[in-house]
Structures are given as C-alpha cells and as structure tokens.
Image 1 (tube, rainbow, N blue to C red):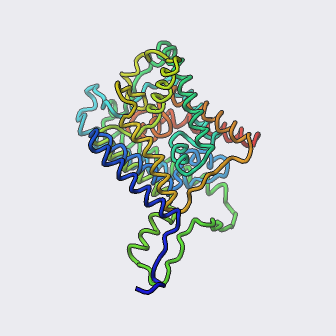
Image 2 (cartoon, rainbow, N blue to C red; image 1 turned 180 degrees about the horizontal axis):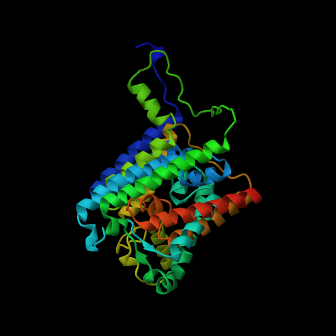
Image 3 (cartoon, rainbow, N blue to C red; image 1 turned 30 degrees about the horizontal axis):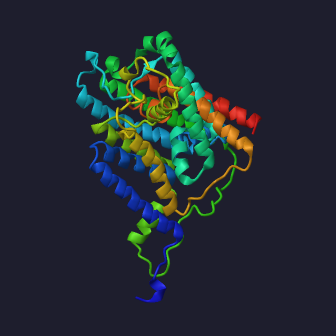
Length: 412
C-alpha cells in the first residue's frame, strides 16, 4: 500500500469513533440490567442521530412557515405523521380488534381533551419559538454543543416543576372532567385512518401552496452552506463503503428522510412498549430533585391513570427506560455531530439570548406539563394514535408558534 492511499483520521472523527464505542458499552450494560433499557437506549440514540443529521426540528417546521414562508421542514413532519398513522393503526388494531367496545389501547397517546390541551399547546408553541427549540430539539442540540439549549432545558425543568405544583388544582377543576376522544370508537379503524390521512394530505398541500404563494414570481437559487456538503472522495478511495459512510455521516439528510425515519422508530418502539415521549421523564427529574431539597410537590392526583408523557416513578433507582431514551438522544446527537465534524461549543454572544432561552423554556415546560406532552408526545405520537387531542394540540401549537414568531419579530 502506498503512502498516498493512507487516510488519516481527524480528531473529531477519532473522538466520534470512541463515542460509538461508548454507546455500545452502555448498550451492553443495559442489556444485563433491564430488558427495556437497551431498547429505549437504542431508540434514543437513533432519535438523536436522525435529528442531528436531518436537522429535524419541530420549531423550524412551525416557525419557518410564518417567519420565512418556507415549508420544507413541515412537509417532513407531515410525512412522518402519515407513516406513523399507518403503523400505529396496525399495532392498535392487533391489541384492540373491536374499537367500538369502549376499550382504549393503554399505551397510545389518547389524552384528556379540554381547555388544558389548548392552553398547553399555546404556551408550548410560544415558548419553543422563543427559546429556539422544543424539548426534544433542545435535547439533541445539547449533544451538538449549544449552551443555549442547556439553559432552555433548565427552564423546561423549572416550568415542569411549577406545573407539578399546580397539577392537583388543574386535575380537580378541569382535567379529571375532560373526555378521551379516540376516533376509531365512532369511525372504526378504516374511517379514522382515512380521515387522518386526508387531513394530513390537505395540510401537506396547504403548506406547499403557502410556500409557492410566498415565492411566486421570484427567481433565486439556494446558497451552498459551507461544510454542509460531503467532501469529494480522494483518488483511490473506496467508492462503495467510503461513499456510503460519507452519505450517512457527512452529507445532510433531508427533513423528509428525518420525519419518516423518526416515525419508523416510533412504530418500532410502540410494537413492544409505548410511543415516543420525553416530557414525563423530565417531570420526574424536576420533582425528584425537589424532593431531595425538601420542596416536594406531594402526590400528583390521577397521574397514574393517564397514558402518554406523564412521570413514571420507580422506587429504588433514579434510572428508568425513559431516562435511557432521553440520555440516548443527547448521546446520539453528540456522536453524530462528531462523526460529521459538526460538534463545537456554541456560546450565546449576549445575555439577552440566555434570558430568551430560559424564559422560553419556562413557558414551554409549564405548557408541556399542562398539555401532557410536547411536540413528540402530544403531537407526533398523538395524531398517529388516532386521538382527537393530537389535532387540537397541533392547532394550538401553530397559533402559539405564530404568536412567538410575531414576538421575536417585534423584539428580536
């Protein structure tokens, strides 16, 4: 072998390879600890990798429609919802063959529908635009080195704690009286799936129309983002495995690929366990820490009877399958960013950005607790669950995001 064909490994790639070894080590440890842990760890890692490589972001999906009249990300989200709907329907039909019986699939994200759903969605939509990332988006950006995302997640934890302090009031006066609305109960699976897919198709067409209308008559070409394209292959380099590795680890994936891939992960984990959701575990983090410092919230009424993104308290350990999922998102994004040579510490330039991240996180955290989920649990996992609350939450998200966009336009 000549010296010309020897390829050196840069520092970022080398550390990335070590990170992959670390991911495998955690998986092997989890494999010997609990049957669910390795599944949620791999799901979290895949979640983080998918979002990092495709820049898949729910905030961008909503915000870009209003701020830049651009619907590329939202189309990816809608495509993911369509794929998830088909997969979830098959899973739920296996568990509940007769949806008219009144029995609901326990783990699907069929949540109480009422004023709390609307207010939670409005707050979450506003807060995620203000902070620059939703909960799951902030988690994967933590892995990329965004210090502002760490501040936002701290704000989310404080907001979730504040919600836990007021949860019993909301439960007694509103949420306990809200009904669960599952479309197959009245429409059967075929009708519910058809209506859901038609609504998603209408939304997809509407986003495309909105984008074309905004740019009608304009002629321009998109600029090439430095570092976003895969480097050219060196002479003599492998044209098969090498090209595949560059395509996977260096070239940016499209939001369409990201949305469909994330939906596939959601379907696979739902087959054995439950749909994706990150907020419930973070609520557990905030309330557990509060208990440690003597500021506990006490018993949360009715919480054990609600599916979706609610805290699952496990006696005797701080580690749970949901912890493995959330930690896996950060670790997966960190590893993917290293292998793509995209990891670096990103420090906000001024104090205003810290205030914006913290404030947005606080609002987003309270909204997530009130709405029983974030863009993942109460939206991306709820609409495929054929639950009406997913659509109401989505509308509230859009309105809240519009308000957040108007706010940052007024106070940039």
